[in-house]
Image 1 (tube, helix red, strand yellow):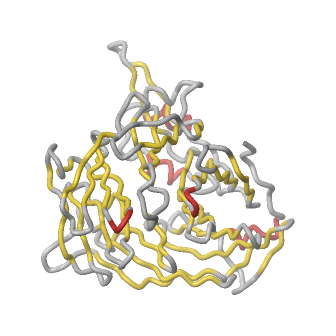
Image 2 (cartoon, helix red, strand yellow):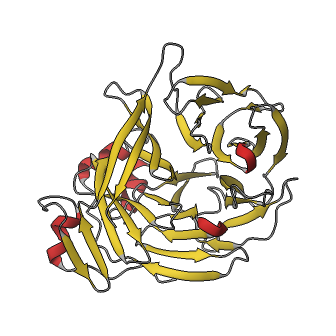
Length: 375
């Protein structure tokens, strides 16, 4: 796969980073246009705590067809169930290792009839709850294929559940090997893991030899990584974050199309950002520092909405902001807006985006945005 999209002309630099551009300014680059001011994310819900609850640590967010919001709180080891207005209705699960119990609820999906699926990040077990939030069954997605780090359900709203899709990581020990692979695999309702639909290189780590003969594996900040998102018709969309190049894979794992969105190079990593990223690094600090690239990745967040548009959360020259680019592949038009870099968007449903941020006091908060797009 080609990883690098064509660069825009230097006239686009200011618009790319959303500084000094007039509203609705449009810049052409080949067949694509970058349309400033044509995307607006309007905050409509901000919930950090209520009279009887608060968030510990938000790991994922999912939304039912009726607008009910599920929030995986892995510090509290349960799923909070909120009304569309943000009122706490219920909690699902509790800390433990039994049926319907979690150690580290990591991923959520809503399937047929608004059934809720919760993946535990500790043991890879998936817990299935009815729309009435009663525990129904569970199965393990963990195997010798690696560690499951993401869960997707194709065909939401279909009459029958299709296979789950899981993203497997080879784990820290393997990602320093040249032949290590990430993999997207189908998993059946009984937990049977199928052959990979697609494989990609893993995220980057480095290793340090220890005095006892072992190795210490260390994540390298600001390095490109693989991203996966489920789009319409059950397609898996894959992008490596050194460019805005996305390949869509069909249900058989065959690539169906590749889209390359032109972009200006990402900004450099500053010394202050390196110091912040390494603030809690107690061992291997200098080794990690030496591996940090000069520039940031092209994007840090990637989603696909129900109309097949690609959402890229892009770093800017201001570390406190993220430039959101929404690429409409049919019209070859990119719409942009900017949000705080504290905000992570988890899911998009119709004209709403759901995510998490922190309050001024540092408390986790759920946010919902109304999406306005001028196509």
